[in-house]
Image (spheres, rainbow, N blue to C red):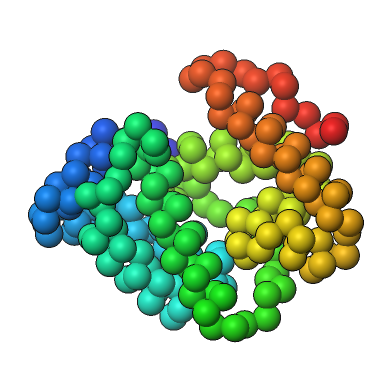
Length: 199
């Protein structure tokens, strides 16, 4: 059962097929948009829900995301982004725009990565790898990455919110991003020994 779930997740999120769907959508194919929605809506809804913290707002934001995909998919360039990177970036941008537009309190609760059933998520292996990389960072680096991703705040704004010096926030952010980049640069089946919790 676990093997089946993994296979379904991987086939649904195959980069080549998603790129092909984006190309068809860019050419005005509405049926391709429906297929893309079926394959990616759970993942993108998870992103916007984490950022907005409200199911109704997340559902509205998800509609914005797919409206954006319909109007902008012709501008997608596979040499610049993988399909998942492009889609996730679109979802994050729309959610953050809605968050800031609502003038809510900028202080968000830290999202919890624990307690998610991998069989109920899209692309569980990729999510597991990302969570593992983030868990390997020191707590200060984890906190700053989560603030930056889920709130869209600048380093200066994060420093104000968490009460730490701007230089420290920038340093932690730079180190965290460098370690994550190194982790995802490793080829399939190889183990990265460069990630550690030490600065």
